[in-house]
Image (cartoon, rainbow, N blue to C red):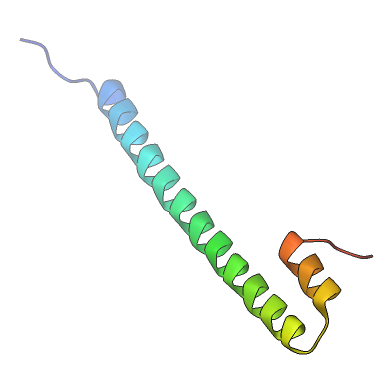
Length: 66
């Protein structure tokens, strides 16, 4: 009969925790990217409505002028 050692049990649970953490982090990053894209689209829409077509294009393409 084999018994599970503390080290092997710890390694298994750590791998599960890392997998769960990776899923949560990637989901959070995806939500942030989606909201950022929606914000850019809304800003570009308002700029285009005001007649600033070049600026709206720059916002959608992510062009930064420093």
